[in-house]
Length: 386
Length: 131
Image 1 (spheres, each protein chain N blue to C red):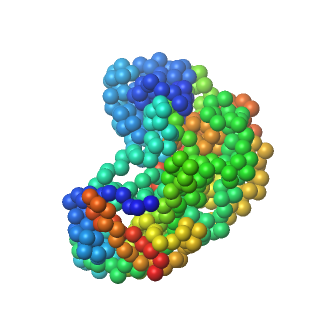
Image 2: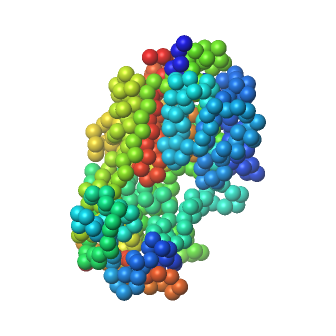
Image 3: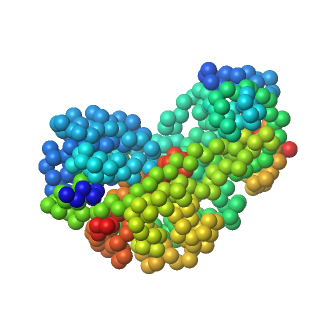
């Protein structure tokens, strides 16, 4: 009996400016699509892990919405942008030990409202007017964008990283997005476009920042034995890791300089029995261009502090030597938290990328980043069993 | 941009009492004497939950900063707010607005000093200006 975990199903709802549907409705549809994609009856799903976004209304009730009976695993998971990877990890462990046979992992959100700018959805979210959070907001620190801007600026002043180097990431990912039918933004951009886009919070231009999307994405994790009889080529979950640095905001803090990828990356690669040079595709959480750059450094694709030179060396983009964020990422395709890199990783590992399929897909690295570099998950996926 | 309105809750009450009288309070560990940020629930150095309030001298250094661009009103430039992470000389980091300095003139390492703004209808809010 081979109970090694595989991802056997992927469900993606309509994404982007899709109005009139709630996050629970997107979540239910994503799970149904993932089960159908795998070739499973919905009733064969015996585990369900949910991750809610800003709408905060996707949870245990999803079982009833889907009419699932006698689940052997059901929980809400919340580690922000690292949640998608974390859900696959918990599902993989449940499948490996025989606790469950087919676990659906789902994220859905509906922060966009008609006639309201996308940025406002995140700017005011979860801000209490009182106490410490209120003090931050009163001081002008009212969104994750501000905190990431502070992190990015620290990287720039410490290592000499430039806005143009961030821009190279945005340009390369848009070139990938042009080949992705699911991407919300497919018009090519230039470095000049990036530099001319309006400031959101310096050092971030508009084109340094991710999209905001409504929709849902789900995957089904099952065993290698089970997957043999299913519809899709299995995507083996070879290794995984998490890291939650617990940065103390005080003298000596590495805030902005290092992410949890520095710990979760090597752990996941070791578990998978591969090395970084085996990785042909890297799907990296990219809430901001900066997040890609610091993740590339922390995984070890280049030395710490050399991310800026690395991303402008021609390594990125469809013609580059390393396939990074091949669907366009959160910057250009769709923003489904950690499901954005995970969903594209599944597509690439299956070899179903069409015009954007990476040639070397034997080892696919998936990075999830949550909070303000507070939570990190890594998955190592492959079309091949160990 | 002027600071916004913030109201106290139980956890921050003592801090705002200090701010009202012009004192920037941080946490000092009852066990090791180390300083932590005002919102710390345990000592950043030894983990001890018992902490006292202690006044900071109010002097610090800019670690990093960001310039928040507001939405422009008709025909006017977008308002800009400089926010920063400041390392107090005692060690803790605070996130606060920088005042009295143009965004172009901020740099990492800039020496700053704490002051307070007193918006109508809210608690006093610490800000930093070049020393």
